[in-house]
Each structure stands twice: as C-alpha cells, then as structure tokens.
Length: 102
View (cartoon, rainbow, N blue to C red):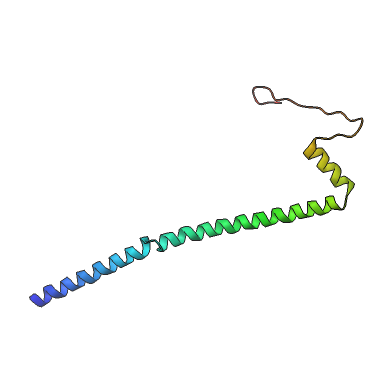
C-alpha cells in the first residue's frame, strides 16, 4: 500500500513539475507569448521598411527628374506644391459650406 501511495505521489509530483515547467516556458520573459508578440512586431516593422524603401525610390526619381529640369515636372510641382499659375490664368477657389458640401 505504501508503495502505491509513494508511486502516486511521484506521478503527481512529476505532473506538477511538468505543468509548472510548461507554464514557465509559455509565460516567462522569453517565453512563447513574448516570442509571438515580437514576431508580429517584426513583421510590422518589415512592412514599414518596405513602404519606406518604396517612398525613397519614388522620391529619388522625383529628385532626378527635377535635377534634369524636365519642364513638365517642374510645372507640375510648382502648381501642386506652391499654388503657382501661368501668366494670364485665373484661379477658382471653391469654399465648403457649413454642411460640408462645396
């Protein structure tokens, strides 16, 4: 009888140690949950890097076209960014009404 009790006690002890060990592996500072959060953060950062690289390439091509003094590009930038108009042109400004319609 005593052998069965001690055998049962050791089984419970081993099971408890395994459960505590698994919980530790999952929830500790370097555990699985932290790993999953870091992995999703890494994916997000990689996406941001990719978007920024695309923006850099677009801006480099815009700089190159402005350096080459392409007239159409210079005119487009002057009109869009600096609201410039050609001589003899008129601007029409639309104001929004209070209900949000133009």
